[in-house]
Structure formats: C-alpha cells, structure tokens
Image (cartoon, rainbow over all chains, first blue to last red; front, side, top):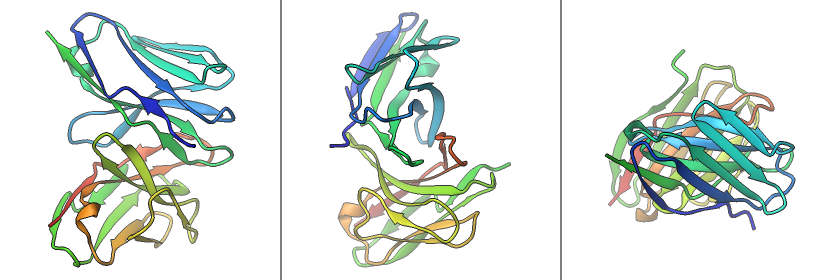
Length: 111
Length: 112
C-alpha cells in the first residue's frame, strides 16, 4: 500500500524537545519531507532529506532517517509555543513529482 | 510574488449544486495539484497536472473534474456536490524535479 503513518497527537512542555515519528512504505523514494501547517493555513516545507542520508540538522530541527526500517523522525529542540502546528511527513512517489502525505501529527506546546 | 492563490476562501453549497474552485500560481511551475484535507486522514491527492495541457487522476478523483487552463491556472470543479465532499481543499504547485510543493491558503467547503 501507499500508507505513510504518523501518530495523531503529541503534547510537550515549552523548552523540551519534541520528536515526531513517521513510517513510510516506498523504499525507492528519493526525498522525504517534513511540512508544517499552522491553523487556518496551507502547508509549508520545513525541511527534507535525501534518501542516501541518515541525518540532517537545520538549526533547531534534526531529521533522522532509518532506511532499513523505513522510519523518519523530526526532532525539534527547545520547543516553543510558536511550534504548535500539524506536522506532515511525505515521501515522493517513484519517478514522479507526486507526494504521499502522512496523516499529520498535531503538536501542542504548553507553558 | 503572491505564490499560490485560491478562491474562494469559504463556500457553502447545497447538495447537487455545482461550483469551481480557482487556483493560480506565479512561480512559473510546471506541476500543479489539488488535495483535500479531512481530519485524521492527512492530505489526499484528487488530481494533478504535470504540465500545461495534461491532467491525471490522483487517489480520490471521483466527483471532481479539473482544467489546466494555462501554465498559471488549475481549476477544480464539483459538478454535483455531495455532503461527502465537505472538506478543506488545497492547491499546490512545484517546479521541475524539486519535490517541494508550495501550497495555497485553502478553500473550506461545506456541502449541506
């Protein structure tokens, strides 16, 4: 199948780290993406990782990729209230520009 | 640069009515997409267009039609709206091979 799976909710305290997990299905995906959706808005690309990498760091964001287990994670260090949003992982469908999105994880940050 | 724009932002229809959702991008992108977003189901691709003059079905095309009017515009039409089409609709576009998709602000559609 083409299911990309994520847990639906995550709640963290401000200042803690958040880890959002994703499992994907297509081992031939070239890129894997993390998108962020703030309330009432469209999705915005946060970061992406090539499938031949196992880690990418971008300021407070760290992406880890385990190709063997088809597992992708997004770690947000020092989580702030402004990080509250829905986070989607996505994989590219082989040889196309189409993306397969996960169900989204709603991150809630409390003080 | 406005990016990706969508109209309208909100719409309420009665069952059986028709309407067209409009989308335009000013980034000279080849590919454009229509998604619907429903709670707990993420984004599902309705139709996409890899280039001007071409369209292809996505995961959930039934009940919808699309037109790629030119490189900038990609419209989504509901010929006979049904309550199951109540959703938030997003248009997106992407450049050649980049994978990154740019999204519009969405249209919230309610079908009574």
